[in-house]
Image 1: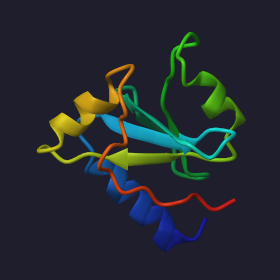
Image 2: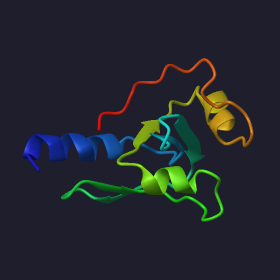
Image 3: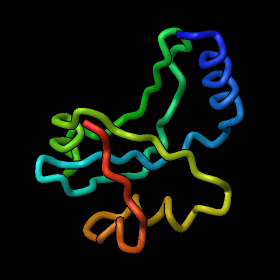
Image 4: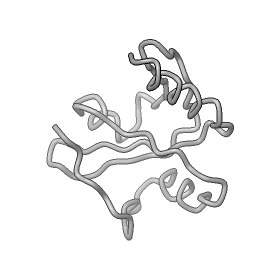
Length: 104
């Protein structure tokens, strides 16, 4: 990894205190899938790696296992409502949220 990207990655993770994120992907039909992950951590700077955990019995497990990629969304202190929404099962978590199509 280039030194400037390595430094930017280290600085971003160094400023992230809470560990609460939203992780999103798309399922096999292209529908957005997301959840609140409170287990987000940095693992390595070179190569850049992060860790987040998902329960084996999560209804989202299949989508994340089959996904070609996923995104981690770092939340600000005033996004508790969004964090709570993505932590709630059985609701449309993406209602009113602008989604960008993932590149394949």
